[in-house]
Length: 225
Image (cartoon, rainbow, N blue to C red; front, side, top):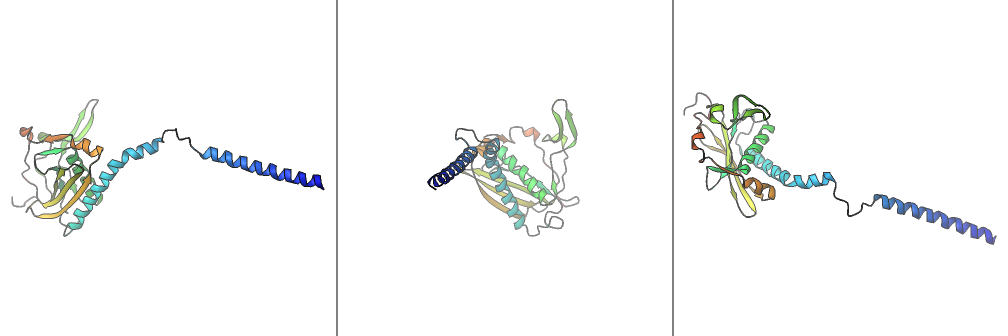
């Protein structure tokens, strides 16, 4: 009887030790050493966050502009006849912009097209330019390569002002025929290293005055000038 009890207790101890060993082994497998570098997917997420936030801010600008249109329907509304999008410029110098101002315009073109508006690309070349070892180019800022007359109901333009911590962006949609303000939006965007890098790449239209081309027509064909 005595030996039977001892054998039973020994068996229970052995079983418990075995279960403990399994638990410890499983914990060791799931624990990642602290010295290992982050996964590539985690690094990419960190790198993408500044640009993702900027895209979200621009989406909000587009949404407010659409909401403020009196007749926002893409097919029958205020800008059903087409929307031109111009580069955003600095508030204190309307001939001065940067990569940030250009990017605002580019992303707003995307946002309005995704909302089914008729967005007109004013930089479309008359033909495709093919350059060996460089690629095929369909848009241009060379006045000699683009059309001199563009028809559209509305013009989306705006200004930005860079402060120490934020960039204030003001966007507006104008009626090309009358100059009437159809919609407006303001957004305060937090400055990041990504935005600063674009603000540092600046451009002035006064540097190459001979390259400036003034569009004669920005409204519908047949409208009074």
